[in-house]
Image 1 (tube, each protein chain N blue to C red):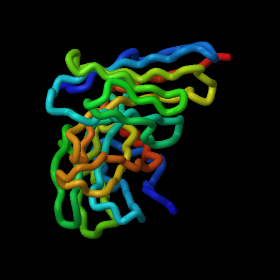
Image 2 (tube, chains in turn blue, orange):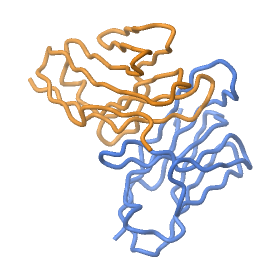
Image 3 (cartoon, rainbow over the protein chains, first blue to last red):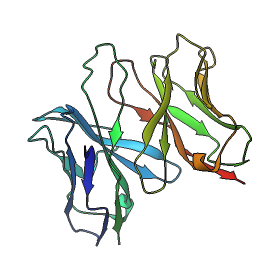
Image 4 (tube, chains in turn red, cyan):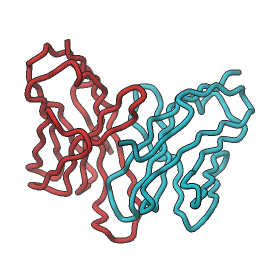
Length: 117
Length: 112
């Protein structure tokens, strides 16, 4: 079972370039999300999705775009990279609780380290 | 606006000692409090979690203590081992909601 797979693991960009971080899960999870991890800031939610065709903004969405065309994939797009977007990005997924009783257990990918020069 | 505050930022404990990490939350509607453990180069993984109907939950050497009136909860690692060296994140959410709000993380180092 692969779980959550993120690619690439490392990427260096120049300011103004665009790129897409890929995220795929094979657990049939409805809920998928992107976090960024920065020193002293913890994990901050960028965007999330509760199913194919449905996305919403998290805490720090500016400069990022997402789409969800399939249950398995949830790519994160950087439209015009800035040095402030240098970070480690994590994709995470879980079953959809939809307000029913249940504990959210997020499964994280191994992360993508992005450096913007 | 930080809804979950975590301290300390880093912690060094001798092998066999007790590691204690503290978190405080602001949103009184939160009713699910998990802890995630992250090893270098890996993504975080759920370690242990608690709900407000109990004041303590223990799983092996790991214990969560919860104080609802103070809006605080803490992770205690008994008999700390070098293999416990990792970054620990507390988090909070509404029960039945997928969105987690994370603390800032604590880098724990266990020295021999």
